[in-house]
Length: 239
Image 1 (cartoon, rainbow, N blue to C red):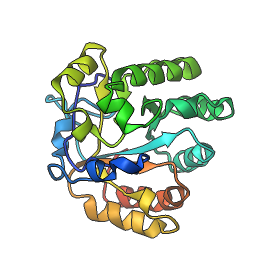
Image 2 (tube, one colour):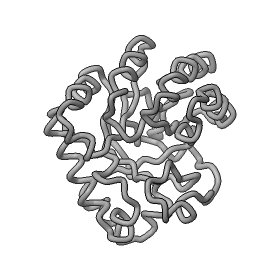
Image 3 (cartoon, rainbow, N blue to C red):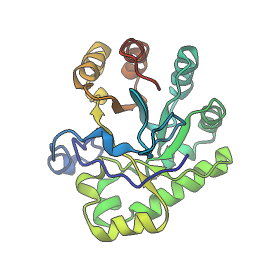
């Protein structure tokens, strides 16, 4: 499919890994993004109208920070439910040979694998402007493992505020990367041992026909996933 360069400036924060950056990262920037901005920036094949937007109700389930020891279990649930998803994977995890078969499996079963940087370190990616080099390295790793070179990337902590400089955005466009954030942050990383809260958060945040749900490869998310999928199916969403 064709992708557009899309920056969702919204509730762009995720589980912080750098202690010193929490105050800067965990902010509510501009409210919830208008999902109609998605247009053709869709990682999976869906029916689209003349304007390039997906037709009908579509939800994109996305999982960050893999591959992990849980990746195969996520894939098992998705296969059982006949649902496709998008995985944004970290280069440092992709280098682990014992996890690479799960990455190949995800591709073989029709899921999209995008890049989530090598290090996930805010300072390195944004203040030291290593975003494009790290994402490029991660994309090549994905190609080495799967035989497919993707161009979809998800910025750790979201594109706001990290990618606010025009110079960095121009670099991204120059190398043909396509940036995807989300419309719903499940906050799953914060709900350890509480999968029901993940489900309720997603239900409460779902209110437009096109949603992109941010999740992570966490055990509580795995436990919540069947109910999340059931909810969207009941609401008439395609995946």
